[in-house]
Image (cartoon, rainbow, N blue to C red):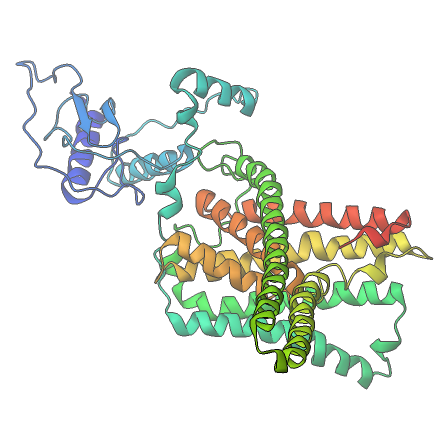
Length: 462
């Protein structure tokens, strides 16, 4: 038995005795389990261990342990019960490197890690086909609710959540409504006199300052928790973290989420239209029945009061008809401002229309997704999992997300969009996923609106 094998075996035994380990034999924060008592390992007379034993997991069936850590049977064998390791290849490699660094510090000569030749990137579609061929469609784990339901270990309390959202609201309201206009007026510039081109530049500047102010507020509130957040999936923005992975790839789930937005918002809009139509029909039907009932009572009444009853029926019919038509119709036709009303004047044709479109695109597709996903998904949703289940936190944060746009007409669609964004973030734990979906959705809506305005079909907009 070599010194290296003995050192590796002793180190692995210490890890198994003191911490929870995963199938790769390394300490992993994502792998939490209750181990059974280890059993002695059978060793040949020559000191070499028997064939590699199989280890049974309650969750994932049978698998074989790591060969290089338990090849020579120093100490005890790994416990029988284990859980599936959720760490990716980079995390496993980092843990292996930490173990080798520790052994080198103790004076053990550990060979350097051999770098494999970088081959061509794996085709994500080929990986999907191979996974389906091996384990069926269920192997893609598209409906892996365990990952979605997993909570964040939030170290801060409710007051910091309140202060964080208050800081975002203050930066949103004060910067656009008070601070920036006051600074411009103090320098002899009245923002109310801006033309369309100046308004588009002003919009970019205000949005940029709001974003920086909000990030500064969150940093001041959460900086003391940096050691507790380190190594955990808080405010994660990692484009290189397996983007095409089926399990947690941010780009894969970004595309899936973007497609789901169309179905979800289409279903929501259809349900609202059907509900409004059904309400109007029931209101009209109730009014007609009331008229017939009153008319029957009048016909069976005393002849001396027939005229009074008829007039009462007529007045009641008029009031019911007015009540049934005006509220529902008014609610259907005039539901307040929408999200596109503020940008419509900037998209109309004229000198500098291309520059205005780029400015609006910068705000709606870059700055707004960056700010809103950090605030509503990265901070609010994560914080709410301290008190709510993750699906409940997604729903609650989506309602606040919809209300924060101050667009009553689009509130149901905004809540639906927030739900898709929230679940996509809960699945991948990477903020790039909801940012990608949010940016694509805003860009698509803006391009469609700009096309309708440019072709003179602005009346077709809702």
